[in-house]
Length: 116
Image (tube, rainbow, N blue to C red; front, side):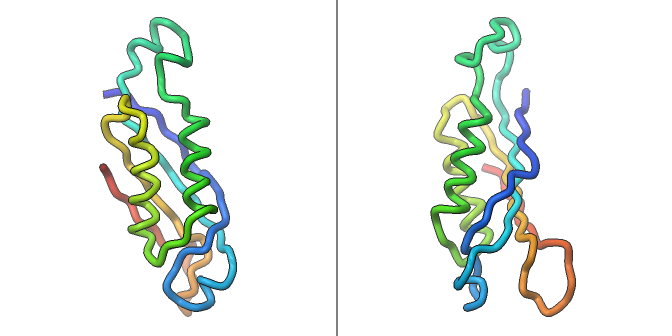
């Protein structure tokens, strides 16, 4: 299967359980891997024959910035649902990274990865 990847989408959102996470936007990064048959686009060189990754990226950012969830699992599930609105996407892998989690210890990020 062919794949389209979008890595390092950056957006600010209000997602988390703790009161400090719910009071202000925090930085998130999203990686997407879409399984799509790219053979028609490879032959035609036409955007109409593929999944527009710009549209997919905008939908993912809209979920991060426009919705509020307690769990990264729910956020990733919502992003996956938006990616699957195009029937040509047969599978999607979503990784959501919270870049500044309030854990009381220093970490680069915490992440959830799921496939649908």
